Length: 190
Image (tube, rainbow, N blue to C red; front, side):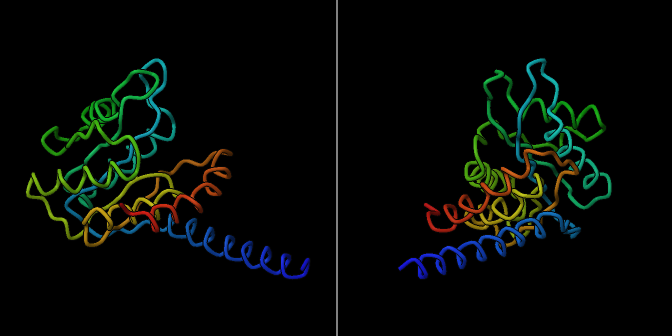
Protein backbone atom coordinates (compact mmCIF):
# COMPACT_ATOMS: atom_id res chain seq x y z
CA UNK A 1 0.00 0.00 0.00
CA UNK A 2 2.83 2.39 0.83
CA UNK A 3 4.36 1.86 -2.61
CA UNK A 4 1.11 2.82 -4.37
CA UNK A 5 0.75 5.89 -2.23
CA UNK A 6 4.30 6.93 -3.09
CA UNK A 7 3.64 6.37 -6.81
CA UNK A 8 0.43 8.42 -6.67
CA UNK A 9 2.18 11.21 -4.80
CA UNK A 10 5.12 11.19 -7.25
CA UNK A 11 2.75 11.27 -10.26
CA UNK A 12 0.77 14.14 -8.78
CA UNK A 13 3.97 16.06 -7.96
CA UNK A 14 5.27 15.54 -11.51
CA UNK A 15 1.93 16.72 -12.94
CA UNK A 16 2.07 19.76 -10.64
CA UNK A 17 5.60 20.62 -11.82
CA UNK A 18 4.73 20.26 -15.51
CA UNK A 19 1.54 22.30 -15.23
CA UNK A 20 3.17 24.99 -13.09
CA UNK A 21 6.05 25.23 -15.58
CA UNK A 22 3.49 25.72 -18.34
CA UNK A 23 1.79 28.50 -16.34
CA UNK A 24 5.10 30.32 -15.83
CA UNK A 25 6.24 29.92 -19.45
CA UNK A 26 2.84 30.97 -20.80
CA UNK A 27 2.83 33.98 -18.48
CA UNK A 28 6.31 35.13 -19.43
CA UNK A 29 5.57 34.83 -23.16
CA UNK A 30 3.98 38.11 -24.20
CA UNK A 31 1.81 37.82 -27.27
CA UNK A 32 2.25 40.93 -29.35
CA UNK A 33 -0.66 40.57 -31.75
CA UNK A 34 -2.74 43.68 -32.23
CA UNK A 35 -6.10 43.60 -30.47
CA UNK A 36 -8.86 46.10 -30.06
CA UNK A 37 -9.04 45.76 -26.29
CA UNK A 38 -6.49 45.28 -23.54
CA UNK A 39 -7.89 44.29 -20.13
CA UNK A 40 -5.83 45.23 -17.08
CA UNK A 41 -6.68 43.26 -13.94
CA UNK A 42 -6.79 45.31 -10.76
CA UNK A 43 -4.58 44.99 -7.72
CA UNK A 44 -3.89 46.78 -4.49
CA UNK A 45 -3.95 50.54 -4.16
CA UNK A 46 -1.78 51.69 -1.22
CA UNK A 47 -3.21 53.44 1.86
CA UNK A 48 -2.12 56.82 0.49
CA UNK A 49 -3.89 56.24 -2.84
CA UNK A 50 -0.73 55.44 -4.78
CA UNK A 51 -0.41 52.34 -6.93
CA UNK A 52 1.17 49.20 -5.53
CA UNK A 53 4.25 48.13 -7.49
CA UNK A 54 2.31 45.20 -8.99
CA UNK A 55 -0.52 47.44 -10.19
CA UNK A 56 1.85 50.08 -11.56
CA UNK A 57 3.71 47.39 -13.52
CA UNK A 58 0.44 46.16 -15.04
CA UNK A 59 -0.53 49.67 -16.08
CA UNK A 60 2.93 50.38 -17.46
CA UNK A 61 2.60 47.26 -19.66
CA UNK A 62 -0.84 48.45 -20.81
CA UNK A 63 0.66 51.86 -21.57
CA UNK A 64 3.45 50.22 -23.58
CA UNK A 65 0.89 48.20 -25.58
CA UNK A 66 -1.31 51.25 -26.11
CA UNK A 67 1.55 53.48 -27.26
CA UNK A 68 2.82 50.82 -29.68
CA UNK A 69 -0.75 50.35 -31.02
CA UNK A 70 -0.94 46.72 -29.89
CA UNK A 71 -4.21 47.63 -28.14
CA UNK A 72 -6.62 50.35 -29.20
CA UNK A 73 -8.54 50.67 -25.94
CA UNK A 74 -7.72 49.77 -22.35
CA UNK A 75 -10.29 48.36 -19.96
CA UNK A 76 -9.21 48.78 -16.33
CA UNK A 77 -10.97 46.45 -13.93
CA UNK A 78 -10.92 46.33 -10.15
CA UNK A 79 -13.02 46.73 -7.08
CA UNK A 80 -13.01 48.82 -3.95
CA UNK A 81 -10.34 47.38 -1.71
CA UNK A 82 -9.96 47.49 2.06
CA UNK A 83 -8.02 50.74 1.57
CA UNK A 84 -11.35 52.23 0.36
CA UNK A 85 -10.13 53.22 -3.10
CA UNK A 86 -11.85 52.31 -6.36
CA UNK A 87 -8.96 50.47 -8.04
CA UNK A 88 -10.34 51.00 -11.55
CA UNK A 89 -10.72 54.76 -11.07
CA UNK A 90 -7.18 55.05 -9.69
CA UNK A 91 -5.95 53.02 -12.66
CA UNK A 92 -7.82 55.26 -15.08
CA UNK A 93 -6.31 58.41 -13.57
CA UNK A 94 -2.79 56.97 -13.81
CA UNK A 95 -3.23 56.16 -17.51
CA UNK A 96 -4.67 59.61 -18.24
CA UNK A 97 -1.68 61.25 -16.49
CA UNK A 98 0.58 59.11 -18.69
CA UNK A 99 -1.08 60.39 -21.87
CA UNK A 100 -3.75 57.81 -22.69
CA UNK A 101 -6.79 59.46 -24.26
CA UNK A 102 -9.65 59.20 -21.74
CA UNK A 103 -11.96 58.11 -24.59
CA UNK A 104 -9.73 55.03 -24.99
CA UNK A 105 -10.14 53.95 -21.34
CA UNK A 106 -13.09 51.89 -20.13
CA UNK A 107 -13.63 51.55 -16.38
CA UNK A 108 -15.02 48.45 -14.67
CA UNK A 109 -15.36 49.10 -10.94
CA UNK A 110 -16.94 45.69 -10.30
CA UNK A 111 -13.96 43.48 -11.14
CA UNK A 112 -13.55 41.98 -7.68
CA UNK A 113 -11.99 38.76 -8.97
CA UNK A 114 -10.77 37.15 -12.17
CA UNK A 115 -14.12 35.67 -13.15
CA UNK A 116 -16.02 38.92 -12.53
CA UNK A 117 -13.47 40.86 -14.58
CA UNK A 118 -13.84 38.38 -17.45
CA UNK A 119 -17.64 38.44 -17.41
CA UNK A 120 -17.79 42.22 -17.03
CA UNK A 121 -15.25 42.68 -19.83
CA UNK A 122 -17.33 40.58 -22.21
CA UNK A 123 -20.53 42.50 -21.43
CA UNK A 124 -18.71 45.83 -21.73
CA UNK A 125 -17.09 44.85 -25.03
CA UNK A 126 -20.45 43.83 -26.49
CA UNK A 127 -22.17 46.98 -25.19
CA UNK A 128 -19.44 49.15 -26.73
CA UNK A 129 -19.47 47.19 -29.99
CA UNK A 130 -15.88 46.09 -29.52
CA UNK A 131 -14.52 42.86 -30.96
CA UNK A 132 -14.97 39.74 -28.89
CA UNK A 133 -12.78 37.75 -31.27
CA UNK A 134 -9.43 38.55 -29.64
CA UNK A 135 -8.37 40.55 -26.62
CA UNK A 136 -5.20 40.96 -24.58
CA UNK A 137 -5.13 40.31 -20.84
CA UNK A 138 -2.54 42.22 -18.82
CA UNK A 139 -1.67 40.92 -15.38
CA UNK A 140 1.15 39.21 -13.43
CA UNK A 141 2.85 36.37 -15.33
CA UNK A 142 1.55 33.66 -12.99
CA UNK A 143 -2.04 34.88 -13.50
CA UNK A 144 -2.05 35.11 -17.32
CA UNK A 145 -3.08 31.48 -18.01
CA UNK A 146 -6.08 31.55 -15.68
CA UNK A 147 -7.07 35.03 -16.86
CA UNK A 148 -7.08 33.84 -20.47
CA UNK A 149 -9.16 30.79 -19.49
CA UNK A 150 -11.70 32.99 -17.69
CA UNK A 151 -11.95 35.29 -20.72
CA UNK A 152 -12.64 32.37 -23.03
CA UNK A 153 -15.25 31.03 -20.62
CA UNK A 154 -16.89 34.47 -20.57
CA UNK A 155 -17.27 34.43 -24.34
CA UNK A 156 -14.14 35.89 -25.93
CA UNK A 157 -13.01 33.70 -28.80
CA UNK A 158 -9.26 34.09 -28.34
CA UNK A 159 -7.06 35.81 -25.80
CA UNK A 160 -3.50 37.01 -25.88
CA UNK A 161 -1.50 37.61 -22.72
CA UNK A 162 1.01 40.21 -21.58
CA UNK A 163 2.71 40.19 -18.20
CA UNK A 164 3.60 43.00 -15.83
CA UNK A 165 7.35 43.33 -15.53
CA UNK A 166 7.52 42.99 -11.79
CA UNK A 167 8.72 40.03 -9.74
CA UNK A 168 8.76 39.57 -5.96
CA UNK A 169 9.26 36.78 -3.44
CA UNK A 170 5.50 36.50 -2.95
CA UNK A 171 5.32 35.10 -6.50
CA UNK A 172 6.39 31.68 -5.21
CA UNK A 173 3.17 31.44 -3.18
CA UNK A 174 1.17 32.88 -6.08
CA UNK A 175 2.54 30.35 -8.57
CA UNK A 176 1.65 27.47 -6.25
CA UNK A 177 -1.83 28.94 -5.69
CA UNK A 178 -2.47 29.21 -9.43
CA UNK A 179 -2.38 25.41 -9.83
CA UNK A 180 -5.60 24.70 -7.88
CA UNK A 181 -7.14 28.02 -8.94
CA UNK A 182 -6.76 27.13 -12.63
CA UNK A 183 -8.49 23.79 -12.14
CA UNK A 184 -11.21 25.35 -10.06
CA UNK A 185 -11.94 27.72 -12.98
CA UNK A 186 -11.61 24.96 -15.55
CA UNK A 187 -13.92 22.51 -13.74
CA UNK A 188 -16.46 24.98 -12.35
CA UNK A 189 -16.97 27.54 -15.09
CA UNK A 190 -20.49 28.37 -13.81
